[in-house]
Image 1 (tube, one colour):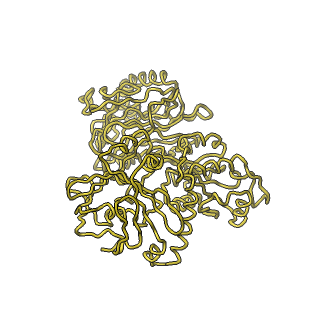
Image 2 (cartoon, one colour):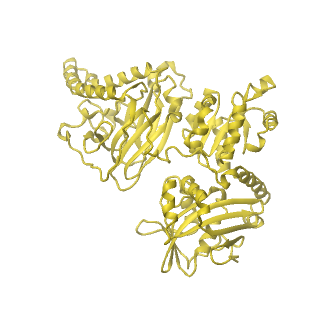
Image 3 (cartoon, one colour):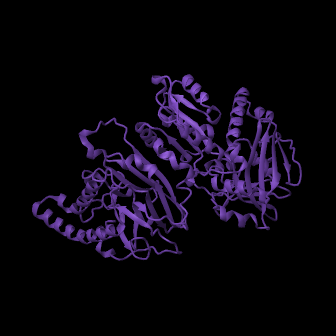
Length: 618
């Protein structure tokens, strides 16, 4: 529920936002927790800041007004509750609640919220009277303090009870531009007081989500925040606009929920639950039973070994992060037949979070596509605290993960050979080190070939995979569902290209796809996705050069997503500039030579390209 009672009386029933297009809000919630969402400040030091802060604006209860008009009940928006909560954020404003995961039947919860909503104005009035009579200003915010205390008590009694499936957030963004919102869950240190070691490492959860223009739904799975919600410690939940943005937003749901029968017609936002690309395993107590350095002999767990092989078949990568003696541990990994499956193992005494970051850097894939499995709660909490975007699992939870959508991987030829491609990448890396600072000398030694092929239906699975999985080098930022890809690829008016790359170390497979149109004097790349496997190899530049015939301008549909910064940096390095109308980036080909002397281009592009000028030179 929201503190609608704190909006000024003059704004009662008034709001500025109306939905511009239809949408279907979530209806199938079976249970949710009582949360009391209120107006807070990210720099709050109440009550001392009330007299020292230039931004302080008093509400009726003495607290600080950080929303322009408080929280307005907006009945123009359908939701599971029948209305939305409209908020215009001011500087330093955030929406916050005391954490509570005690689940109540949805029908009873909504009845309770209505009852509490009716009681709130009475408590407000009573508090003002008592504050005046007792000359104690603390009584003025009795409603807020009573609601917060109720949430804390419910959560404290929830241990061992039903647990939520997810944190559900439904938001309407009336702006024409996307916005970003930080969802954070943190332990309430102040409430623990002297009971807490001030140096203690406490679990926390942070996730930055993008709110496109209009309606969006985001389901954050329990596995992502459970280290906080199930820590048996009091915690707070905050929703904070990124940076200095002061947006107006309408919140339809902001709840810990359990669902009834899951719907088939609704697709969870892929950006919130990305497909898993790598699973990192602990060793002692996880990959095998026992502690290697203490027991000497350990017993491999057959179900884990079978799962690793199954994930490998789907193109999901596997690595290890273990606090252990490297030589002894790696010998045991080899002994049980898993050495060939493990990429960039990190077996040392560093924090697990540091090792996972090293693995992510070596694999060049995003951390939110990682899953970490460890039997030690401390290690899981350490990773969650440092890397909240990484999903952490207890080994007892892995029995069904192969059936979960995030772990489906792919059945394409590229997926089945993904591990081998990364092993070839390790060979390239060693060879690159041999060349020292002569990077272009290394590239010339690779004997790279780029085959540019016209799209055919045999490419469909791989192209579908690229448009769904590519983030860093997704130039348009678009994500297509599989059923949306077909109509685009069948459009005869578009040029559809598939990029296949190889070098003397082996094949990279199909690494990219592009949708191209042409207008007089200009090549227009409407969509371009490129695998990070060839990042930094100038493949995109060789492709651009091969596309051009007699055109003098190259335009790329670039739209920033927050995750495709490498694509922006690449375009900028080639001399592309943002267009005056703000749509895409363009390059004047009379000012730049894009050809490369170390990449041979062949295929269906219309001519074999073996250029003479150096890629990357002016």
